[in-house]
Each structure stands twice: as C-alpha cells, then as structure tokens.
Image (cartoon, rainbow, N blue to C red; front, side, top):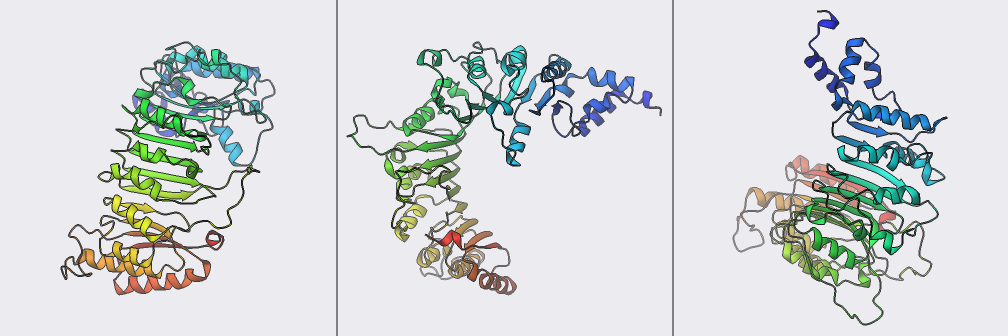
Length: 483
C-alpha cells in the first residue's frame, strides 16, 4: 500500500499514539508534531485539519533573540486548535529549570516571552472562552491586574486552574487596594471550575479570589500559610462539594482575651485532606471545631519547635471520623529557610506519652495505614496491643521510627500468626478478633548501628515463615534521632 493510500482515520490514530505530551511552543525536539507536518502534503493537511492535535500547549519560557516572535508562534499554534477546548501550561519548563538549580534573577524570566508582552492580554484573554485547563505564573503588577480583572464569566469552560501569584522575588506584599480587590472577577461564577491550585506569594487573601467555592471538588492552597479563621471560612464555603484539599495554616499566639470564638466548620464530603500546620500549639481551638465526617485519608505535616507533637489535640477532631478514616499520616516539616530571630530553640522538646498514642489509636479503629513521624515511638506494651488486635485491628501498612525495632518485628510476627489462627485461646492475650488483619508492609527507621541486626532478624523470621507475607523496609539514619 502506498503512503498516500493509507486510511486517514488509521493514520490519525497512529499519530495520537506518538504524542506522549502536549505540543511545545517554541517547537522542541520532544514534540514531533511540527516534524510530522513536514513529511508530505497529505500529512501536513491532515495534521493542520485536526484541531485536537494542537489543543494541549506548553509554553516554554526560553530566552529568545526576538521575543515578539514567541507571540507570533503562540498565536499560530492557537489558530491551529480552531474551536477545540484548550489546556494551556505556562509553567512546565520554568519548574524544571528551578528544579535543576537554574534559578532566575527576576520573576519576569519565568514568563513566556520574558515580560516583553503581557501574556494575559496577548494570549490568554483572546482564547479565554475555550480554555479548559490553565497553569500559569502571573507576575508583575500589570499582568496580575489584567488577569484578576478578566470579565465575569469569560473563562466559562474552565475546569482546572493552577496559578502562581508573584510580584517579584524581593516584594511579597499585595500591590492592590481594597477597592481593586473587590473588582476581582476572573473566577466569579464559573460554572465548570472543579479543581483549583494557587501558590500565593504576593499577599493576596485566598478569599479575595472569589472562587465558586461551593462547586470545587479539589482545592490546593498549601504553598502559603493562612490564619485558621480563613481556613474555616473556606471549609464552610466549600462544604457542599469539596472532596480533596491541601492547606497550610499558620497559628499565632492569642495575647488578648478572645472576643469572638472561632466558628465551627464541617467538611461534609471531604475524603482526602492534607494539612501543613505551623505552630498549632499557639492556638489549638481549630481542632475541636473542625468536623470531618467523611474523611478517608488525613495527612498532617507539623512545624512546632516549642511543643512538638501533641497528638491529643487532634483526637477530638478525629472522633467524628472514626467510621471512615483509613489512612493517617504524620510527618515533620523542616524549619523555614529564613529563621525567625525571635524564635528560640526549646531546651527540651516534650516526648509523646504512650497513653496519648493509645487514645489516638482507640479513636480510629478502622485505620488501614499509619505513618508516624520520626522520634514518635510506639512503646512495647502499645505494640503488643496492636499485635493482638486490641488496637488498630484492620491495620495493614505501618511506617514508623524506633530506637531498635525488635519489638516491632516480634509484634508484627505475632499478629500474622493470630490473623491466620484467630481465637486460639478466647479470653487470653493469645486471642484476637475475627476481623484481625495481618500487617503486610512495614517501614522502620532505626539508628545506623541497629540497621544490620534488624535486617538479619527479619531474614530469620521470614525464613521461618513467621513473616512470610510481610514486606519489610529497614532504613538506617543517625541525624533523625538527635533531639
């Protein structure tokens, strides 16, 4: 069969199988679309007559001798998409460059065109009604104002958005007056918007974005800390629809008597929640007022040098989640890159008591996966209660740190045996509930000097059949255990 006789429908299917990523502007070696248009007239006609080939576009902020030509290329690519819905990404190469250590010296270097033209007025706005997904960095006061004042309802097809707001690297305060903020219309009343991520580095209050909160199903505001009052307001507004969220909350010391109590908030449909908490011991009222009746996965990341982990403050919040919570993850946040000069390192950081952990475990009996932070240890008696199913009978995945780890091994082996042969001696410590689940994956962080010994013990128990169906990952570390 001659190439010209090849069925066009089949040819198009082959083309689409070759497109691993979005088309790239300016053209890149990773994108074969421009090359395919040069093979023959038939292929060029077919490529240019198929709008969906050009509907997903990555705009790369590469240096260009004549930046205005970048604008011409962008318009050419968008014309090829005709009336198709668009996914526009202005951030892909900017992120990879920063990941590789090629840090820009000004915010404009992150923009497609390097700031030589306004990407909002020149690229985004002319095709705004067709944009289904938008990922972009919006920086400089002029570009930010142009974006936030896009007329009401213009982005009518928008389903997913990820925006980074940045004035410049040396100025983080908001450039807007209260009157200007009230005119932000870009996100107001968008009928299709369901997923939103915002990285706010210029002081804009998330509430001022006037999002269609009660339609969002996924919301990521985890890059910049917000007060707990803003968080509870967002939870209240988004309660009818939100199923997944990521938030960073900064807690300040309450010096004056509390005039107004913090409002309660119930996230009725929220199933996955990630909280990045900064010094919650300054004001822990939030956790007795937040209800998560449908939560299935909860991840808490903590930076609190004064008090460390106080699991008891989360227990009251989790009581509402006892029937649904299956995955619970605690982890430590690193200290800020710019330390607070007024912050003093504590002389002694408190150690979590076994009773705190046991109370937490009793609160979440349906847990399937548990990840504890470094230096939060499960004591041997508590581990024994987990072994026989008095605590966490459905637990299958366990990640933790330990000074030696041997009591964890023996408890996991004992639980495996009881899961295979339940109720061997009813009423004794050898009994187990009929629903007891064997732990199938364990990650233990131990000091380096204990790593090899623990590995050897795992091998012995696996060879004997006591841990035959358990996957172990033993990780050694020293600095992690220093207080």
